[in-house]
Image (cartoon, rainbow, N blue to C red):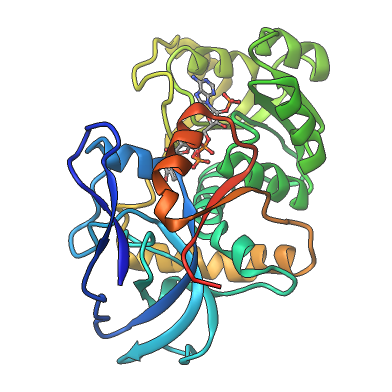
Length: 328
Ligand SMILES: NC(=O)c1ccc[n+]([C@@H]2O[C@H](COP(=O)([O-])OP(=O)(O)OC[C@H]3O[C@@H](n4cnc5c(N)ncnc54)[C@H](OP(=O)(O)O)[C@@H]3O)[C@@H](O)[C@H]2O)c1
């Protein structure tokens, strides 16, 4: 099969298409003929040698795919050969065939095509876990989502709206802010032209944010804390401006804030299966009803994975970048 290989960690242009052995599923796994694969920012980190695959996972990049099951091995529950699924992977999505744990395969939702389905797993697992389980977002809450037009942000805005929350978001251009409004955000702040703290305070008042979904870190953390309401939950999923932050602990104590975060890829299978169960119960109905619609920015052929990565590196995109793996 054809697959995209990381030729040498942390060197430029280090993605190459190679011929590789088709992977073999173990008990409880399926083999998927990949139609489309999602591009996620953690793939860029893997190329830099900073986000290695978990033990036993493919060395090829690619955390999510959509395609058809061509083989099942052992107990795979209700899954059958021929089923159209999307799946969360430990790696190996940038290839014509990928192995997935049966419990991490989800049916392609009604009205969602294979391109859109490939956009789902990494983002919706991450948003479900961090915004809803760790952040305990409810319909009565106001949520601040940084990076509103990121793959993650585009789902976070829509899922928060589907849950009934009030959504405030930041993005790096007026065009991106307009896209955040189209996705359902009540307020979108261009952080390059405005001080986002002042803009949010003037839009919704002081100390009104109940949940923060933060992928920025660094100097954003203290600013986020200033915006938060008492009993708020601050959830970190990345630190694009740095992993270290100086914060005033008295703010956390006075407002009784909870600071948390998580990393999806390294979590045990049983925990990911629990997340998948929550997605089936709560998020799949939103997708089936069209309340959440994957936002696709651009589709590249698999051989152009490097160009897709360069686009993501520049943050030119609004929504998801997808690789087309299957030939027409
Ligand atoms: N913890 C987990 O389990 C987990 C799982 C998946 C992804 N992630 C992380 O979540 C983040 C989003 O992933 P993705 O695949 O959706 O990536 P993505 O689409 O590339 O989004 C990254 C976003 O960050 C914004 N950004 C970049 N540099 C920034 C800066 N210095 N300050 C403020 N915003 C900045 C960019 O938008 P602007 O143009 O608006 O700046 C861009 O939209 C990534 O950092 C990724 O590593 C974490």
